[in-house]
Length: 159
Image 1 (cartoon, one colour):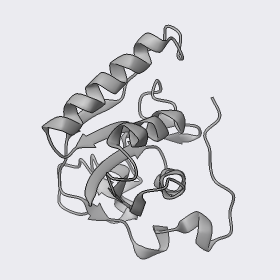
Image 2: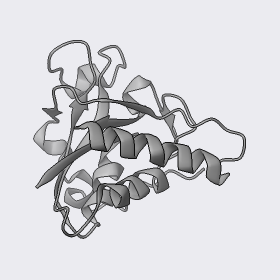
Image 3: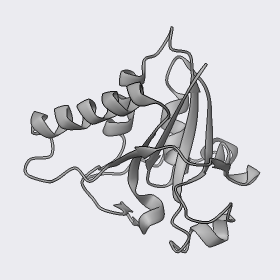
Image 4: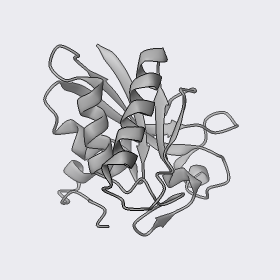
């Protein structure tokens, strides 16, 4: 199995969308990118810890490619809003790709450039950061499968 880690706003919706993809074995909500050690959700949601809400995905490359996961990532959030997705505002909601190896880095950069060239976002600049992985801190259990546990529809950002 291979890992991929994405930040695209509130992790509940991100987790939901990735779990719909054939070949995704597991998707786990968590925190990454902060300057401090693990923080609680109450601390991360203040936006002062530097952590992003992320989803770490375990996937089977024989079924789904990293490129296909990037397509899901780009389709299900607005990569042109800095530290904001819908009503969620703060650096914890930033658009980020945390690459696990050189190949993921190169693929992510190419994918971002292709999206920019596509004209989908017009003249808006894609602000998604592409950075090396850091320590992944799983979110509290009540965040895992949150939408499913609470029988809520997916939370898709409209833009």
